Length: 261
Image 1 (tube, one colour):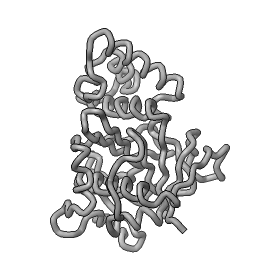
Image 2: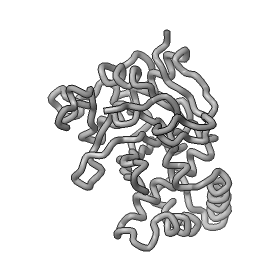
Image 3: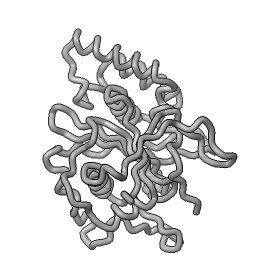
């Protein structure tokens, strides 16, 4: 199976907001509403009750959205707003670093490098069941660290060029002060975290997320890695185009995360 980590692929943020101007408009509308009614946009439950968010989610869902999808699309809007406020920090994890983080925890403190961001994983390296019963390739995960001391995480799956849409999987919130505990956690309880049950996964070197804790574990290890290995970070402008047959590139600048030579 072909893995891709050469550049930032088009992100769920770009698919959802269709331009920075739309994201900025939603941020401004939320701020105006917050000032008027006192709702806390850092609380995901209060966030989805805001009128500006409801209007945005209704347009995003479309008329055929299943019941309860407001919670999934509301989570995407929540992370998109925080991502915008943080000036869109996009990190692209190389395959080598991804495998390094799966194999063990780096030394260092697991603190987010930015208040919010999106970690894009190598395409087709990690897989998960997003609730459909069918394993989907994991594109990456958003994180948002709020002033309330909580880490909110959203996994994105199923971004494929042969069909529209994506999978949105909100994770339970976690106290920021406890993120470091995930570095060495044995989530599955049998030492097999990240092992994939997919046929042929051993041959292709694939990994899977079976439990939410594994996503937090990888994210915590990424946090620790970027804090302790600054030489592995390279700021890159978005590519103008991509080779024929390769994934559509993102228009966002990104930080490539590699092994420090």
